[in-house]
Amino acid sequence: MAKKRKCIICSTKYEYCRNCSRYNPEETWRNLFCSENCMNIFNIVSKCNDTKEITVQEAYNELSKADLTKKSQFNEHILTEIEKILSDGEPKTSIEKIDDSNEENNKKTFIKKTSEKKKESVKETTKVVENKTTTEKIVND
Image (cartoon, rainbow, N blue to C red; front, side, top):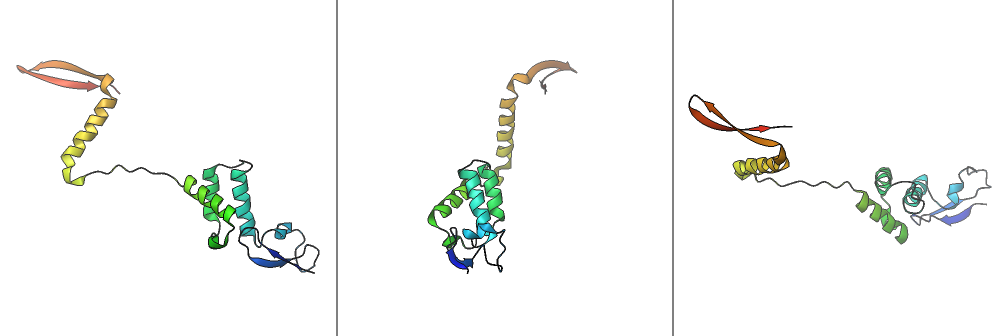
């Protein structure tokens, strides 16, 4: 006889009996979870937080593929862990704001930053060309 159960992830009520012929006896995960999705979510969080088998970034990538539509029904502990993984694992990007209204100033800033990086490799030489003295910079890469 099927036993009434409650999923430890999303609290969905369901029936399962490992000895009943109408249920697949190899799906022992049904003792705790209503679906493979809930089982997968639990395994991802456990592998990241408990056993450290995967990184937070890997957990983020795997959770991104999972169905989190019932997230509002998840138990408090698992929800906290999921939200932590999703916030910590999200790829961080930094974008430097460029003021398009002052293009000349932006070019000077870029040249200045580039020059500072190559300061040690710049040498100044003086040439005389047709009675004019010019100074040129030679940059060694």
